[in-house]
Amino acid sequence: MTTPGKLIVLTGPSGVGKGTLVRSLLPRHQNLFLSISATTRQPRAGEVDGQDYFFKTREQFEGMIAAGELLEWAEYAGNYYGTPLPPVETQVNQGNFVLLEIEVVGANFVKKIYPEALRIFILPPSFTELEERLRGRGNDSEVAIAKRLARAQEELAMSHEFDHEIINDDLETALVELEKVIFS
Image 1 (cartoon, rainbow, N blue to C red):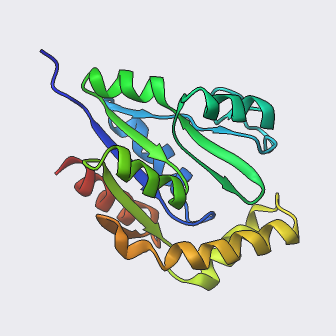
Image 2: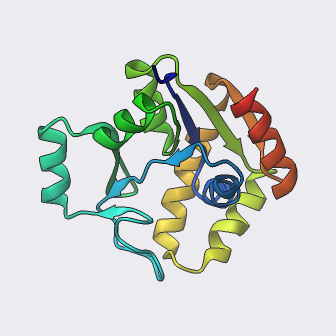
């Protein structure tokens, strides 16, 4: 009989470094499966459909909602984001650790469905640093950055509601702390 897997939710404001942490963590742990989210936002340069996200039209995404095909979903900065349910269920049932890198609203929704999920909030070293990271990406308009910063303030206020908080100031330090939380 296969030992049940574990659902790990990684969240935090846009620009906090969730993606960088995940890209560093995955090659170090073969039993970690990254759930690929679906979104209605346009792909950024270099992003690949089915690898970075499942890029959907608004109509396709709303069809997934209606069909109950999403573990969680939220609308963020004018676009939908969500986690397709079947791949998550399959991996957890096979005994793997499934990592969700999702928005705070979605992370709170997952808690209702999977109360045993391990929920980790990634924090920036400071709000100023978060703003610098978002601007440094160079791929969002001023309007989009302003929306992300306003949303980040709301999200940071909810960080204490999560099982663990990790400050992403130094990548290697944050990565080691994340590993301790996941695998202890």
